[in-house]
Image (tube, rainbow, N blue to C red; front, side, top):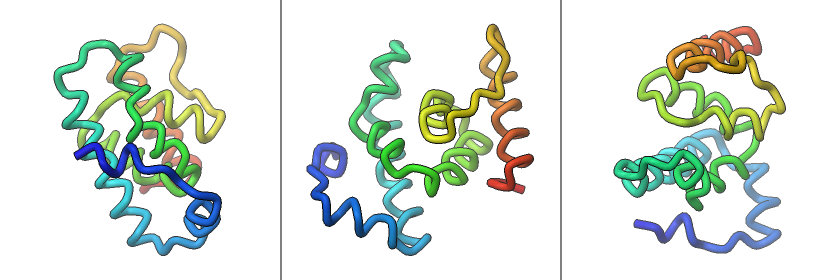
Length: 117
């Protein structure tokens, strides 16, 4: 299951990824997300959860992953905040926010920015 997370990306693959149709982007995201969730469901350390190779590959997808991350955050909340901050340079959740407050802040931000409805 870790195959997709451990594969090396070549420069040509990275360049080509900018041209990926939305369907392929969604498919790749879902595959990476599923593997990440399965591999980290019993892990309690947030730093280990967000250091998983699939999580890092999702961050590497850049802005095209943002609506997919927000959709995932809305439907099945998880520790997406570091990924969203890394990609967007935003941090709408106030320091000391609870998990649920941070989810709400990011979803509001996503709506304001036009990433989600």
